[in-house]
Image 1 (cartoon, protein in one colour):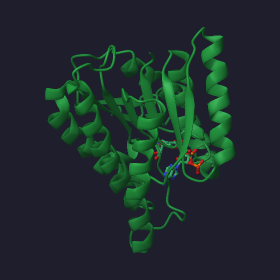
Image 2: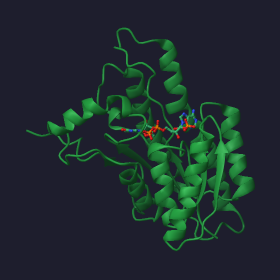
Image 3: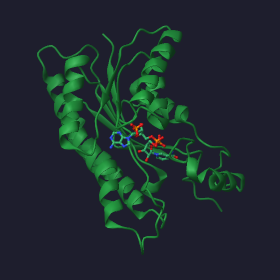
Image 4: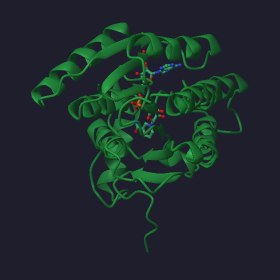
Length: 265
Ligand code: NAP
């Protein structure tokens, strides 16, 4: 029986890249999305093909759920229970940028509420539901085979980098760092390890509108590794955790940012 990963926001971008890498190493998948059913189905088909090419046989299920909504989070967990029946890895990936990049002296409360609901409240309470289920699975008379539950949250360099034209986004991502610390501290006794991945500049739909700006910044030396990151870069870091290559680490931050975080002189 394969281990099972649930990836929020796996229809596009980084989530899709994570799903592909996990399929290649033999994970069954719950592919979650918010509104783009066609993209989610495409991810699922591509994951099946990637797994097959890697000599793996996996199952992939697709589930619509808006992680900002309590009822949808419960639906997503129930869906995983009834379809694949176990959960080894939760990847909190789904997230949005503000619709308008507005200076913090002007930015709206509406945008703040939207970003906090999707980017922070959603993962915080989805993790709560997933963790309860993981604890119950681990304590079952017959736990799932090779059960090593893990939780990965995709934050951002915005967790510590002040962008004054998207304060709501930065605050939501800074909150995810504490989410990781809290759940790492709370869940270690159950053998559930918790990690934060901080991507830098990754080429996806989210960064499409600012492509030229980041092209220039990278060209000017913003990142020691002078290129855009890819969803595959992030997916491979998640795959390292999924393969249990960090068994004595929890609450750890893994930068996937081409060295953006380095102070240089
Ligand atoms: P993206 O290309 O815009 O994809 C966003 C994904 O999240 C889509 O699958 C979307 O589903 C899903 N989603 C959005 N709102 C949702 C909701 N309420 N409930 C469930 N799913 C929802 O974004 P991305 O660049 O891949 O970003 C993924 C994560 O990485 C985000 O948390 C983002 O903040 C973070 N990140 C990105 C970068 C970057 O440079 N791109 C850097 C650092 C961190 P639909 O397709 O159905 O809309």
